[in-house]
Length: 423
Ligand SMILES: Nc1nc2c(c(=O)[nH]1)N[C@H]1C(S)=C(S)[C@@H](COP(=O)(O)O)O[C@H]1N2
Ligand SMILES: [Mo]
Image 1 (cartoon, protein in one colour):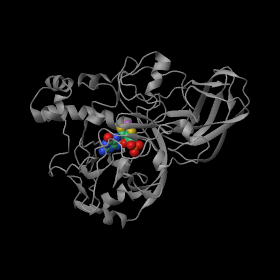
Image 2 (cartoon, protein in one colour):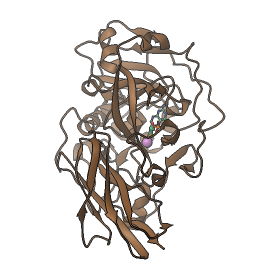
Image 3 (cartoon, rainbow, N blue to C red):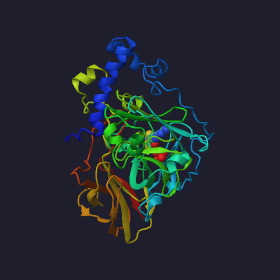
């Protein structure tokens, strides 16, 4: 397997997980072994203060009042599959639609209820040992700064989890996403680098941690190199409208290519640190656990639970109902393919369970770290079909027939057999 470049997420998280355990065990004056036992005890961890819920030092950011609904926008049956505080987009509802997913149709993944934040009182604080001049910015301050717009996907790390059932006969705990835990939008905001420069970020700054104002204060660090990338944004508009509450109003981060959890919503503060920062979202959770995902010996000895998630893989989906029945006719079969690292260079489709493959026509635009739309003509006879689509990206990555199981069902990037019946 090709290793991603060192500024990539995989390398970064691996280093951090090891450092975290060393540092915390020293700070707490416990052996690493004892720390691991405590970590294994799971939910007591946060209350024991082993995993800082919030970066230390500058007071607690206020928790914004939660709405009483886990998702505020309407999630009609025809467009979404609801699962607790999550709403998965139905792929058939994208059939023949434009490149971008409308805000009303964009999937939602919430760890709790959507908070309601009053922009008049909201502030963004940028602080920590990595900046010389800590900042407090209002909503209007941010809107007055230079902004850019980029088109990128956000995809949940668990997208496709449900298909481990199809490939391995195993149902995996966790939100049973089919492939609708992804969306592509135009995001407008201030480059994070711009704000960091205003805060006089030090050359010694190492990590940047955006912290959400939701009840769980969801937070996950990124490296200074990713934070300074030109398309890493503090986003306040989505497809030209103010960011909707469910998608992070007033401000979220966009971290192109990284797993969905990196794109923190409802950001209230950004910690910039010369020392490594950690959160449970890149140490205990979001790791690939399984026989086929061996962990570096040194890290395993320190209790790293699995291989840390990398940038998103390559996936494809048909704009068709799952296991639906359609009237037989000559038709255009449509779908989309995407990659967390680049643009898609080729898509092949099979209508007969993988015996014959055809190359799909790709339609412009084809934007890296977003997706490409493709289609083929099909004139099926009545019957049952298993449709397959396999994409390759411009980094040479493709979709395998099968990927090894991992305990939490992340990163499902193999070819999916899409059942459909023609009447
Ligand atoms: N503060 C906060 N940010 C968050 C989350 C959350 O629960 N709280 N969920 C994350 C996850 S797991 C994903 S996949 C994306 C989903 O973004 P969306 O709901 O706008 O589609 O947001 C991420 N950002
Ligand atoms: Mo996610």
